[in-house]
Image (cartoon, rainbow, N blue to C red):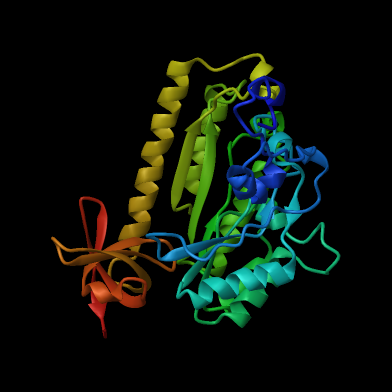
Length: 352
């Protein structure tokens, strides 16, 4: 709606709701007469749309969006134009929503946003993502907290010290990379060189050897030649990353990358994506194998009546299956990882 407003408004059978007015959707839907919502310029909006939530049906973890929008303007991304500039949820609202999830019995809360590392920069309070995480961990000690993602430039001593010192801040980082080649990163308008990403990964692993580190890769970006692709493969092979989310580049209308020269042919992109996903699979299995014989704290998520097994994620994001009663769903339990079967970790419940 934010991009194609003129085309959509030709139809009077629809009500246009901008990203900044989503909290008014119900009022518009229930209105007996035509309901006109102000379609404000998302680029100048300074408040985050607050939609309080009590439950995520069928889920044992909850998601708390503390930030929206982005100021980075990566050359392949339309988000700053459709979601606006970076905006933070006020601290009292964050704490109120976390308290609601705690009252509802959730044992894990994922902190989400478009660019969560920018939390607090637009608020009057002297608040950052690091002080917010520390406060959440302190005020809700029985709840586990996990970051959805964090930029390479925002992995620092404050974050790692918190991860080491707060037992309920999970040792799991998702750090977007996009490309392991500096020339491609510049064309993407990413605001860091490869060395910054590599340093973030190595420092995280040195501080917490059992930490899970995932990353995003955008393969086949315009101008990516064989050397750039090989640079990405080699970088990821050398670093202690745990898993990869690999996507082929696709043109987004309205972005600079859509009109760039040197677009990579589809069949070449497909082959590069395959190679990266194969590498990601091997890295993930290597991480799983390294934890066989260790005991992890697993949030049991669901019970399979046919097998009698539960499945859940460890603090460092290993999916483990184990035998146990259905009543354990939603609880954090100690599981010894015993083996891999067809690349899936299996374990044994310890001291129920």
